Length: 337
Ligand SMILES: NC(=O)c1ccc[n+]([C@@H]2O[C@H](COP(=O)([O-])OP(=O)(O)OC[C@H]3O[C@@H](n4cnc5c(N)ncnc54)[C@H](O)[C@@H]3O)[C@@H](O)[C@H]2O)c1
Ligand SMILES: O=C(O)C(=O)C[C@@H](O)[C@H](O)[C@H](O)COP(=O)(O)O
Ligand SMILES: [Zn+2]
Image (cartoon, rainbow, N blue to C red):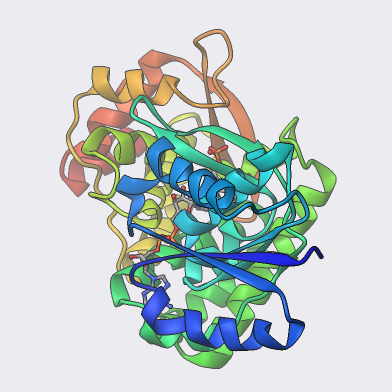
């Protein structure tokens, strides 16, 4: 580690947890630069990234400076990308403070920012030196943000581990109320699953794409409504229901499996009915996805709970799912019966 550390956080987290982190760092005797970003997904863009570069340059941060991301996925993704770019790459550490960041975004080295035309479209793979998660900080997390984090926990079970999926079903009430023992187990197993997938395919040449279950639809919802209107986890929760509907339409899963996933997502207080954007707009947004190849949309589908696969899907099939998913629940069930 060099002689300087840059603590990067946001205006909500700084008064809650920055002093504690500063006092932990104090015995190391490093020069500390603190950068406080504006809060929210709507600020996960180029201008916010540039605030970091400007401050690091103005403070003469050298190429051995370690950046520390103290916050949720937004702070983590921007800080990681700043670390990947600043002086062509400096080390960084993730200190995730949301459930979503502790179970998913702090692990695996995907960093980046949004573009008005697409979610996370500008970024880099850059692994953190360490991830330090303390579940005690989740006590101050708003309930809506806790639910958003559960979406990525459910995703991990749905794509990779049926035993974990069963466990989430059994413990959903405990997870909803932030029970410490259940939360620690959810963080532990989600990180274990993610780390295994990333270790096998760090740069998403294959299996890592499965971690994108629910995201082709979800990212379209986030970008289509305007970043920050629906939380990432909310959009992913709804996106997983849409992907399950698609899986059923393609004959991969039965109606009972789709219903089981949908029930769990609803039990985690996440939306299951998609916002109306129009099928044309959805398809336009879904095509702006890193899995798209020569304009063809690739989706992550379920084979069963605990197993997923990537498949190219025609616009025709997607239109049917989009229509069903934005109508009433009864209508959404229709194509599947
Ligand atoms: N890199 C990846 O692999 C990856 C994976 C999943 C999601 N993401 C990204 O993560 C982002 C979503 O992250 P998020 O859900 O953590 O949202 P977020 O970073 O916006 O944090 C949610 C809100 O909670 C506040 N907050 C954070 N910690 C708190 C605490 N302990 N107490 C009280 N308030 C607290 C934040 O200030 C913010 O207002 C999205 O941009 C998504 O694309 C990235
Ligand atoms: O780590 C991954 O790989 C994921 O897909 C995890 C997702 O939960 C996360 O939202 C990720 O940022 C989405 O990746 P993207 O490549 O579609 O931007
Ligand atoms: Zn995600």
